Image (cartoon, rainbow, N blue to C red; front, side, top):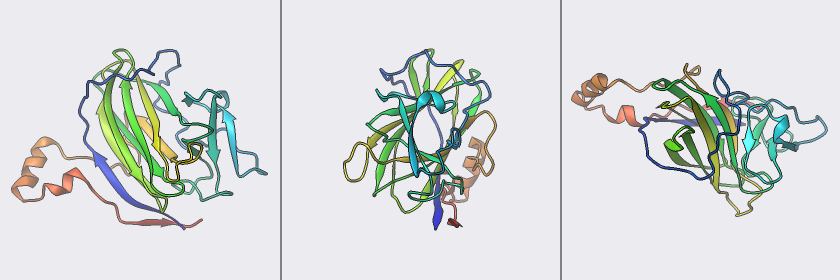
Length: 230
């Protein structure tokens, strides 16, 4: 049985960091991030997983030198975060970065969400949201998630340019094998919030909560456990 056990809501600030791997050579997607559930392209029914060339995975690019993106199915481990059939494993044949470029409007609020899960134990990855025009990082955070359940993380960030990169970096995986770990699924990055998005109160509301002694409610929220059968 799979479960979504908790939800982290993150408020976003701008961080003036630069990452050397950022480039402008990839096509940006105008309607927001695409193929966030990794359901395209399908893994053949006689395989439990597949290492697929990035050219065959709509939307996604990798820094792996073999250009491979690994897609998993329930035939090997478990289903996807929301009961779907496919999800990505960030650690494919080597430690690498998985990313997608999205057309954005400067000043617009972008809503984001993704699900993370370890493979053999606690796996660690970094999410970075990057303005490609200035090569500056708008948001960057490391996430550590164990292998007992899919965990949903979500937040908002304000775009500062016309093209924004959504980027996952592998940091570490339980067991130390660089070719396994860091399951990812149901990635969302767009101007409209996804279904079930937990909004963060405006500053005026925050002051009201402080007056009631309820500040802790706005920084991190946990959603009750939702069990999804295999």
